[in-house]
Length: 338
Figure 1 (cartoon, helix red, strand yellow):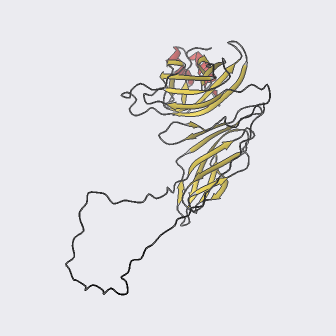
Figure 2: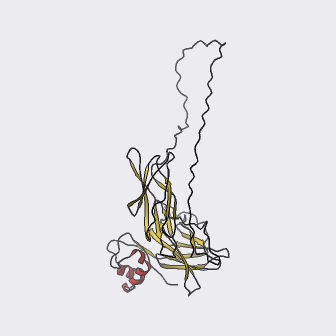
Figure 3: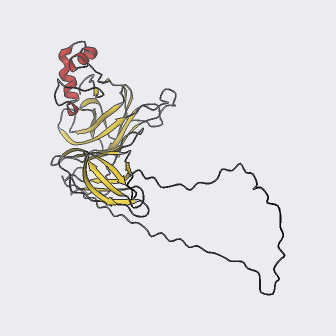
């Protein structure tokens, strides 16, 4: 598969401010007016609040993150003016840059190794004060022939995919791979995912490697899925497989991390305006609590502990040892298989 290489050009325009001042003075042939002493008058009262000039945020944030399948990375963002911004990769210093007068920075750190990674930012101001980013970027550098994954995770907001197919070039006769263009929580709490593949393709939706539903692309290549209820708040891996028919092999695959957050007004919000090609009424999911193990979770959902392997296989991406699971982990519990 031929992958496109995305180059970043960052243009910071020069800022020019012209100040015009007009000085008014009496003409030479005019006598100056006799000064008059008057009692000071109180300033007129007004209900209009005083205007406060907005200060730029000193907390660093991501504006642009571009990840190529070979691990090459480009990062741009903003912080306070003249701040030293440190890019952290999995909690360790990875690269540094100094912001300009407007607080913008850009860096091209060394390539990432294959596998999942997490990026964050710390900015140190000239006075020594430090500010940590409220955002995190989740990345996954694929094995040879795979597709890179990049998602922006912000507090109290759903994860946003940073992948884009703009500029992707295909070799003559090459098949366009499936891509995920949108993953979000809608106002009524419904999970929604959408993307593109070739026209008439069969695509399957997986959460944490657990099959959820399958559907087809439209004549223009769009696909979409919605899950009305059943998802527990937490982190998921959203995966789409393009299949070579119902029992065929996987032609292409796309995956993105997603932090599912139930909206505060989910119970009273109006129905979601987005319509999905495939709607799933409900899925099963659970959050691990202290004292849980795969056996008792299996007993709860399936009535027998022996089926714990089904839950393990569906969530193997976050379970290294089936005997060790941790409070706060979110597992999808499969209902059926494709």
